[in-house]
Image 1 (cartoon, rainbow, N blue to C red):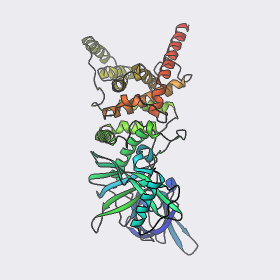
Image 2 (cartoon, rainbow, N blue to C red; image 1 turned 180 degrees about the vertical axis):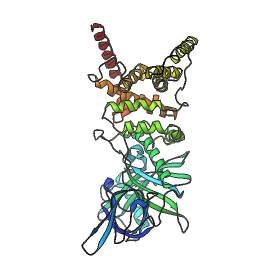
Image 3 (cartoon, rainbow, N blue to C red; image 1 turned 45 degrees about the vertical axis):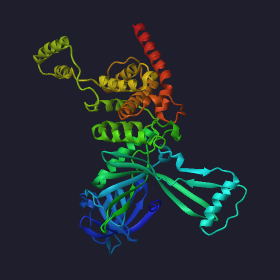
Image 4 (spheres, helix red, strand yellow; image 1 turned 90 degrees about the horizontal axis):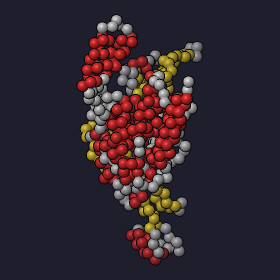
Amino acid sequence: MQSLEDFRKSGVFTVGSTPGLAGDLVLDGEGTSLDLHSKEFFTTAELLDGCILGALHDLTKVSLHGCITTEGPGRGDNGTEEYHFSKVFPHFVLFGRQHLKPGLAEVTDVGFSVSDGHVIFNDLAAFGQVTRNRQEHMELVAKAELEHGRQLSVGDHPLLFYFSGKHEILSAKTAVGIVSATHALSYSFPGPRGIKVENKVRVNIEFDAPIDFNGAIRQVLMLLRFLEIVAGRKQRVEQMNILIASEGGGHCPLDVYWSMNSPGAQSSDGGRSPNSYDLPIQAAREPAAFSAILTRWVDRDAELLASRVRFSTAFGHQRSYNVDRLVGAANMFDILPSSIVPSNVQLTPEMEDARAKARSLFKDLPISPERDSVLGVLGRLGQASLKQKVRSRAAVVTRGVGAKFPELELVVDEAVNCRNHFVHGSGTRMDYEENFDQVTFFTDTLEFVFAASDLIECGWNAALWSQKMSSLSHPFDRFLNSYGAALEELKRVLHASKQRSKQAP
């Protein structure tokens, strides 16, 4: 992949039906731009598919996707001549020997690396050092050198390093295709300056059938949502490329520059990198288990997409808390499908009779907001409430982890009460401003219950995870470690609030 750092090149571009426009392409994250200019009038309003195609002066073909006009169209002159200009922001820039237009199902593979890839896929067995006595080192090195026709003089402290040669860390057959994690080495040949071998872990998707570019990005985002749970924080895409069918047969690779670089990546988390041993799923040490969980997680993504996206947004805030995050964390349970949470509850015959009588009484009243509100509430009787939905997911965690989270139902009930106060103005059992630590605890609880219950249903052994030692670099571990003390503090606050309310006049 070519270097896209400090990238600034010129070329010729086609905008809509207007070819031959001169342009300067600058890659700079959110400041990425294509500056277009011509002596003839043109407009970027013709970008119906948001795409601009061009060729740089080094003959590299570029495809700019998701283009938005940020300046112009405009014009300037020097008194005798005029020129026209426009500035465009592209969300993605694709480089290679071919163009790729939006909507065309031509992408067969996508590969990318993420910021914590070396932690998520911590394959310790792939690289190492041969630690033997000097004589054995001499024999190994001398044999290798003789194969190259050289004779080597071995010193007192020879060093031998290796890569095992096994590039694939794991592979999983999923609903979208084969997902794999592989080593991608770059190295220089040994010389007087020494030996250099660097490695990036690549996540790859080989699609079952070619898809369009936007579809490929959606699948990348899906895997990012999974990997951020494993790593315990948002992930940044550092490199990406795709394969499309080559015009001359075979495949043509295209390098992809993501201007927004996976929105919201690497939110503040105190600057601490996760410890691979703290991760809830061990990809390199237990590749079969990781692959099985990933496969099931992908299978369920279309069904749980809306809720998982809400979780990802909330989780991205890491150690920054506010009321909006709490409300969002509660609401993601409300939009879970009926296959995941209960949609209806059985009413007793007495409740059914009372509802029928109340409905009859209120229907006879003159139309008013109050009358309609009560009828709405009566109509929703029998539908599962938010509290019941959250309880059902908490029960999955309790069954999976056992006694590690006592009275979890009490905590999630209070979390929903807190949410209801900030959404509906409901009465409170405590002063949330005075006890904002409880709002933080509620938020962590809701997010943990959501993600953990999802992973458990995908095959995660949460009981085994809850028994291991940890350096607390993962939010799951921090929640488990602090839960007992946080629960006792919640009960103390509830008791103190109850006592105050009794003493109030």
